Image (cartoon, rainbow, N blue to C red; front, side, top):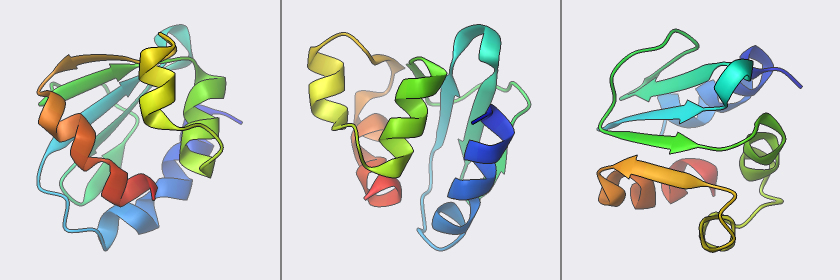
Length: 94
């Protein structure tokens, strides 16, 4: 699954979540997904928090098959910027 398909899958969750921050999922050469409030984009932009992970791990995270805390502890997921924003993502991914 590509970045655009993942972005499309999370748009409905983001629109109704009341999320008030910006987060960038950076999958390296596969691209980025930027969530800014109620909008989702695959265009690179600055964000409060950047989460770096592989495209496969992002897909598993969005599907609920990858626990974000365990992924962070295992080094599969790296967080840069505001850690509280990353923790608030659970409302979107849950």
